[in-house]
Image (cartoon, rainbow over all chains, first blue to last red; front, side, top):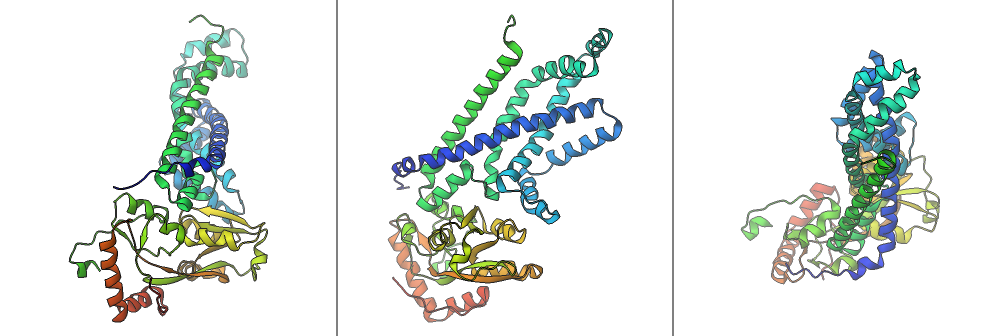
Length: 223
Length: 196
C-alpha cells in the first residue's frame, strides 16, 4: 500500500474536531446524569413498587436492552414527528441516550439495592427514620457505592455509543470526523485523531468518575 | 466488465462515505458506483472516463415553497455526506440556509419524509425513488443544482487497470451496452459522454 500520511490537514481542522468532542462530552455527561436519575427511580420502582409499576419497569428495561441503539435513535428522531413531537437532532440524541442508559443502569442499581441486607432497613425503621430518609441514607447511598464500578463502565460505554448519533445529523465528534474525512479525503488521518480523542475522553471520564466516587464515598473516612 | 476481463467479480458494499477509503485500503480495486468527477477527489484517486451522468436536484414536499436559490434562506436542507450534493449545495445555497448532514441517503430521505428538514438535495434517481414510494407526501422537484458525470475510480498509479477500463468503456459506448444499462436502471436516455 503506497499511502502517504498527511497530518497537516488534520491540524488545520483541530478546532472543529474539538467542537465535536465538546458536544460528545456535553451529550454524554447530561445523559449520564439524567440516565442515572431514571435508573434510580426505575430500580426503586422495580424492587419496592406495586406490581403494575414493576411490570412497567420490566417492560421498559427488556424493550430497550433487547433492541439496537440505532433503531432507538431513529424512533426518537424520525418516528416521533408522526405523533407531532418534533425533537431537534441533539435533543433526540440526548433523549435516546438517556432512555438507553436508564434501562441498562436500572438493572445495575437494582442489583445494588437488593444487596442491602433487609436487617439494615428494619434497623433504620426501628430507629424511627422516615421513608425518604431510609431510601436516601440506608438504601440508595450504600447501593450506589456497591455498584459504582459497574455504573462507571456503563457510563463510558454510553459515551462511546454516542458516536452513532451522527446518523441523525447531530454534529458530535463522529459527525465532524465523517464530514472532514469526506471533504478532505484524508480519512485515515482523521479517524486516527478521532480515535485518540475518544480514548482521551474515555480516560477523562474515568478519572472524573473516580473523583466523584472519592468525593461521595471515601472523603473523610478511614481507608 | 469482469466477464470481459476474465476474472471473478466480488462486490464490496460500502456506504457512500466509505467508497474512497475502501479503495485506498485495498478492500476493493475499482469503485464504480456513481462517483462523480471532482478535482478534490482526483487528488486522492484516479478517474477513468465517465460511464454515466447524474443530476443533483432539490426535492421537497409540495407545501414547501422553493423556486429560486434565495428561497433556501431559513430552510433546513438535508444532504448526504461524501456525495456530490455535499460538494455543490453549500456553494449554491445563500447564507442563512440551514444545511443538515446525514451519513447515508436513506437517512436523508427519511428526514424529508418525517418533516425533520424542509427539503433535501440528492440525485434525481434517489429523489424519484423517494417520491414514487411515498405518493401521499407529494414530493416534487424544486431546483436543479448541477449535472455531473461519474466514472470508475482506481488507486493512484494503477495506470494499466485504468487503461483497460477506458478501453472497455470505449467499446461498450460504441456498441450501445452502456446506454442500455443506463436506460434499464434510470429510465433515462444516456447523454453523450465526454472523455478525458
